[in-house]
Length: 319
Image (tube, rainbow, N blue to C red; front, side, top):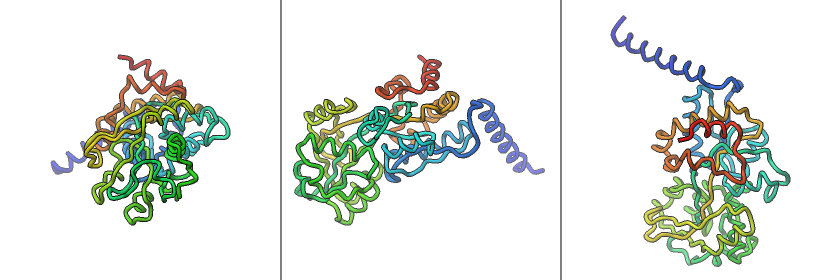
């Protein structure tokens, strides 16, 4: 046996040992088969985060995961509630609607939170050379307000109404982020709305191809939306340098949660959180939003209750 062969055998043995160790440490509550993370559009932060998280959990827990492309928050919540997905990303406002059975949800969903991950920002994107200067100018223009069953659409309608614009006055093709970017590049739309982490990969790539501007969202509109709905929003700013911005742009932020079904076994949720926090350095290397995960802030998911398995995990990891 050559030295190279012996070294290869040692590496394989070590990998097997690590895999077995992961299996030995995980909860007995796991079932067989691949588990799904309902993520979002392929050019958004959700899908980037979900893909890296799926890889990390597969490695850390020793259970196969995959990220699924979806329409966004509302779709993700429905998939988690139905059992089609074990985990999903959801904006705090859409999640609040889901547990209360309001908005896009005809009845309450049995959803609970695993962690608060990071804040998302409303983007109202138009071409740099466009004559659209404010939200009021969107009336009569062809502007995507987000895909059907997306959290983007939920916020888009609420902000337009707060700004005095009837959403039905907008020619809305209901595109997801990928479709919106393609349509913007070809001149088929005048703009689009998006809600996501900073920077959103697809928008960053778009801004590298053609000049874009982001319309301001006034604080008074944020306050009005909060008063009308779930008080899940806060005024925020898109910082200078983001997408080439030369000045900060006022906007709205909303927290993002990782959610699961209420009947998910406690041990599964604890294992997911172990894997999530263990993998954070690797997640942050690939997805900037991953660096914002904070165990002390992850528990603040009101009005969505923390899953009992998550409560146990955070109690055991107090510091």
